[in-house]
Length: 361
Image (cartoon, rainbow, N blue to C red; front, side, top):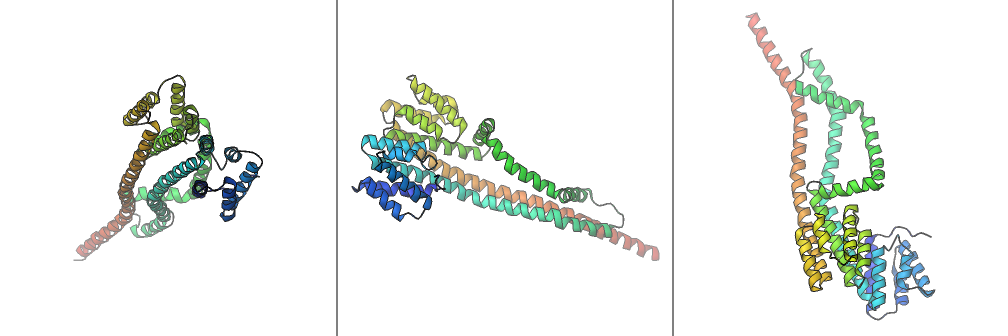
């Protein structure tokens, strides 16, 4: 029976609690039973029940977790397996919990930073749609009655035409938007679409820099955590490729895997990829030569996390004034377009009144 959705934050708490219970000397089965009783997440409760039953049936913890691939990814399972083999299960669980907490922290910061710009964009789009579809057409009727056949300013005519197009094709535009919202995710799931989208994320202006640093942090932290837990390097690279979240980066990791398999280094393919900075390949090279690769990878991950924070702050600081200026230009243009006919009407009345007075004198 498939488990329901279990949020990463809930799984991270479970992992840390299980590590703590094992660390204080509590048997694994008893720890699982305690966590099963206290958890309020029904899906997690079912999973813990299944895992405990599998262990009672003779399976190891890693084998029991592997039976739930939708909940425990290959990284999680292999971390636990390495901890079981090395007799340091609590250490492996604690490292996995730290890994998940770091990933959630970075994701949360990016979401929090993007909330304000996205909210402003949604509200602005609604206001512009309201102005274009409902407000501007009413002004057109007023101008037609006041101008008495005189032509409207060309800029006003242009704005009114745009408004008319949106009003006449409002349902069509909405349907096209809905179709794109459904079709684009399907295209991204295809092999070619996913590859194009992942490459675009890495090279797009402003946001691409943040994506590169997030990918680097994920790569370095995942590989460093696995190697530090005793997972063989080739197996660790396979897991990192599966959990990279980016097809382009996955291709680079495949080259690294082939290089290591043939007796080469990790630093060489990293440098050739041009996705990661030269400093990263240099630090990895030093880590390989000194035998401190896991520690070096964790340092790279920590540095990348700090750079993600700075990049997100810089991106947010840049987006806010850009959006304000854009909205000011759009709304200001609409206001000017609506005032130009009024100026023409007032000017025509003044000139007409002056001519009438001169004729009567």
